[in-house]
Length: 552
Image 1 (cartoon, rainbow, N blue to C red):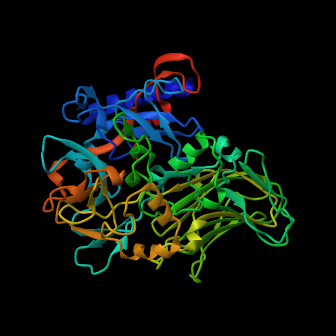
Image 2: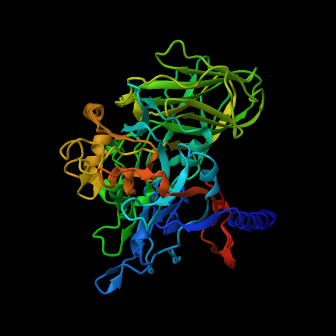
Image 3: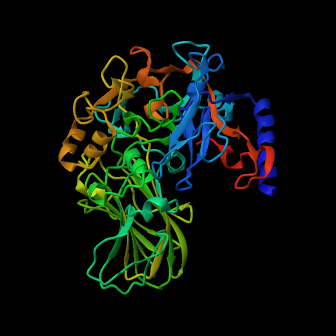
């Protein structure tokens, strides 16, 4: 209760201060910045695995008039969404089998400060509110990615910049705090779907083959993995992206068997549950093929709780991108962490951590924007050298990317649990007046032939599991946006569903300084709950504490 009172008091104090010092409230109208900031949406808890997620409901209401969108004589209503964790599509209509109400909530209410841009220049990665260049009465909110007098290039999901007068691009790296705020869910192992596993669907985390007899003990619910450290060599756990399809779930509902021989790991993509909403008139409640995530994402972050039982040994975290192995090794006896990259011999940053001897430690290892990062117990670790690395020739995935994350032990008795894999944002390289949009989708691929045509769920899954077809990733589209003085480039975090600088007028894709309103500072009132979370106790307007906070 104390947290609730404190959050409400802080929100009102901030509202008063910002009102005094030139600030105004703003309601997020659409899902272009989701899930960082959410427009009209539904909150869902998956009935199969229990994972909480959101889906867009912006299509139910006209963002300009605030009136319901009509389909003939009845209003459009979002009645289904797909879980990002287990990919089960839930029916949310009034007659849903859960007997739950799934209202559509208004967008986040945020405070926008005008003073930051009165006294200083906008910074890259700010979330900014501005007047739309194509109609100055309309307010937009996006992330600022391009600064004056530089050229911005979108390539393979990343942002590259070239200052005026320079001949070469460098990657624009997000600060660690921004990275944490912008990570997207891939798989949380605590939210397994027991119904599917009981029928023989394989776990995504599994011990790798080893010369040691049974080096890992796996808990009954498949959520924790223990090794006693007695194996003479390294022992490993690996993740495979074993994604059930709508057809797999339907087969299970019909009482059919799991076809283990047909299950193949896939590449991790830019799938976003927020974009999977289906309305009552959709021919199928399952997401359309173009909402399944069409672009491979190699920038990943791995979380794990390590309960160390021995005074010595080594913990290993590994991520793979484009066949390159990125490792963090932590010596349990000394607490020293060492980073390495397969094939880059002079990359050896070292750091001291608190992982020393027996104890429980929360670890996060990330490979984002050509930079390796390590957090221990939520504190960012500083290394003795740069943890950034030069651009590598790893833009094409290999078979190694079908096991993109691993955890290992070398002589350490440890239990790994609370395993969570997340990904970076993926900016789609598309530009109005060029190719890349159409048929209800935008994509980096340079034609509407292979790899995704004909566009069916089966075709998408086959492509993402077949390394022989992946050379096409080498020829993905790149787009460039030159900026002059006082011009800024704006992109939405939800790149697949954002009308931003990429899709405005081909000659006015920028936002002039005079159109900037301010910087998004604080989510002061996300939608409230009608009951106390986690209970069935009715409590109207119960504050949504978890969503309150500074905008990053």
